[in-house]
Amino acid sequence: MAADELLGRQMPHDLEAEQAVIGSMLIDPRCIGDVCGAVKADDFFSDVNRAVFETIYSMFSYSQTIDLVTVLARMRESGTADDRLGEYLIELMNLTPTSTNVMEYAAIVRDKALLRGIATAGSEINTMAMEGFGSAGDILDSSEQKIYALRQGRNTTGLLPVSQVLVSVYEQLTAASKSGSSIPGLTTGLQDLDNAIMGLNNSDLILIASRPGMGKTSMALNIALAVAKTSGKSVAMFSLEMSREQLALRLLSSESFIHNKKLQSGMLNAEEWKKLARAAASISGLKLFINDNPTLTVADMNAQCRRVSDLGLVVIDYLQLMQSATGSSRYASESRTQVVSDISRMLKIMAKELNVPVVCLSQLSRANEARQNKRPMLSDLRESGAIEQDADIVLALYREDYYNKNSEVGNLAECIVLKNRRGETGTVELGWVPEYTTFSSIDHHHQEDGTV
Image 1: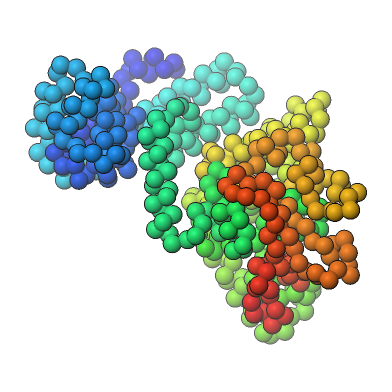
Image 2: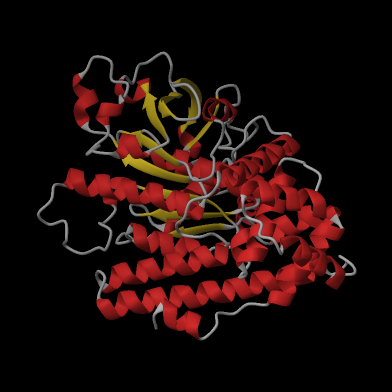
């Protein structure tokens, strides 16, 4: 069904509810803040009502006086008022004797707007399917994006006036100041690393790279556990290399302070079984979800994450094991570098769509092995292509004792910040605790007795 056919059948709307919302805002400006948090200008079906709301919203954003006279004057200045607007606004105020029920009116407006959005999305999905815009998988992914955007209350496309963007930024800054935290994002569980990258922030793509055996997966588990514990949000982890059970064993080891090898053997004493039970109970209470399907594509992950309520973080282990966008052979004639570059771009888009940080692990090439100083560089990213361009933050793990078993700095790890859109690059020193396969802040090494 074409969009014009839908319009011919009258898209869902409720003009009386729209008028009641505008009238309430004019007679009682104290309700404007609540209304602006419940509806947006595009929710109004009537062009006139939408223009009035946009004006009030803009004036509210700048803390200006809002009443019949000031709103009418502003709209005349902007050229959005006609000769009858004054009479119309007075009529709305007379038809709305009280603002007590304004949020109920706003809910009606929002509900009708959502129905219009569903109808429009359905029309667009039908058009894509009937006219064959891409493969069935592409159309399905696009359809899910449209529905997810509606569910999240966001449009998939469109320009926003900078005034609305500034309001959003101001709300973020206000929330950050009220949190009392020194960083705006979610914690990694490692204070020095948090300070360096300002935590894990929404829509950021964070890449953690190293040679095999340096502890990439351990770092990912560190971060996933810290976010799940401190934020209470859901964490989705996709493991394309290790099984769910292997990851769970690592989590239990780091949480219970029981040596990883001993834990796998099951040869535990009574006290260790108690510690294990406490650790299992603690981890079980977290909203931590694991998928170990090795054939997942970015589209698969994106679709699954959209269904997770209160999502806070996505972790992927690891980039080079991921399949192409559709899992098909469309990349058969292309280089692996191009495939990985396309995947990294899709991951960045996913981070923006979901509006959560996405942590992705990546392998480093052997280039550093030939250098005297084996510390990683950006150019060492395996099949790098556009990876370093798409990532907001690139962290590389390095341990001197990995290359020199007799090193005087045993169990000292370096988290090298190779790229940081939120601050400076540099090196953060961390403690590596091999018996628990975990990292710690440099002054807080785990002791054998389980103390920190």
